[in-house]
Length: 632
Image (cartoon, rainbow, N blue to C red; front, side, top):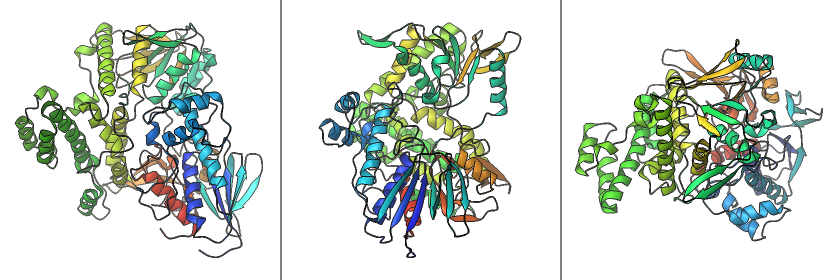
């Protein structure tokens, strides 16, 4: 690194990813950099927790990952060039907090939650926010004397290159700071309304109704929805469960268990919620964790195998997802499922023999059936991806009554499997594989690893939705709560292929599904889906500015027909993710990390998981070392 009087760094956004970059800068600089470093942090919310994990949000909002599988620190499993300094996971921090070994002032409610946390607890999001803010304070307190950290509680609105080679960062309060190196870790940003959403908004405004576009439910003013009011909710993903909780338990309702069945006792302040989605059923409930902080290690979807496929794929190495990658993903899932089935029926020795015979057979070949028959796996238990993706049949949607009967049976079965655990249940152990192999999936996807038309049609158009449905769901307790809310009449789940339009003559939104006569009317529509990453529509102030200055561009993926598919993500280089300008040039000292790069990278919103070689930590370490001028 070139010796200077002071080396200045800026980090825009100090939620989990900005915090990880800060942690990596501090640890890489500790014994390796003698030059004084000034790190300027720009964050309008609290440092460490940012917006999504802020500590003042509703206690009814919970995480969908257990406390032992989330951390803010690197560990020895991560393949990085920088040093590792131990830091506790959320679970380990909770134990210390409950024992009085964590410094800081915390309210009685936070201490009480810490005392109740075990390694498989799904904590409140606000509780995780307290952990992140503690981690930030610890970094500041334990930083080496050569590092000065300066906080700027503001939203950045512009960045301009200076004649001296620096970057002038300006906040919304007018404050301006010049830095040498700049990292953008802005996380989920709001996006402007699409043309279709604008029409829905205009209609709602015209009839005195309400249209709520995709947003973080914690940020939405739900007081506008009156008790008893019928509302339509589009989407059955994680945001739906947040809205469900905020509009029920968040309004004073209570759950009680009677003879093993969960019941909901309304407060009378709830609206009547009619919800639905194209698939018709909510995301799979997350199973009880039996793995601790371990993960399933893939057998066929390995980096070596992926590299071999790339070497045979032509000059650019781009793969076709359905042809090259999906068979490997499917094979991993099905092998775990069948191995567990055999173990349940015949014991571990037979399961080991089955795995040896089955694992490396080509996916969907005749020999797989031979092995399944050898171990007497009943045909009715064969894994069927089409049935997994669409669990209902034409008979199930023949009438509202048959749909409700199917739905409640389906939800009860999902809860039953989830309560067995992610090892004991054959189904849930298989689905958990999709979480465990994300490192390898990211390796497949990164930087245009999938050919453009295949990425558009197979990844974005099909697999991402399937992956979310099967592996990104809420704790199973949320599914059980949904059943209780259906039972007491507070929630009504419309049939599959749910769509919503507006009727100008009636002055209402109208929701319809594939179930005959399944029609619902309301003046309120909530779109319970996360905003899609889209540089074209972003309303993030700094990305808007950089786009206007032609300092960022869309990431595009080359197609086999010599065309390009334009993703919604920001174009960056491979690690350390330097920004690519509109003219194709690379800004050597500006980096974008995390969610805004979705498309270049894959499933960028997931956190740091300990002891599984977290790619997020590897990414942040590469940025930190580039910022410090250290080799990777």
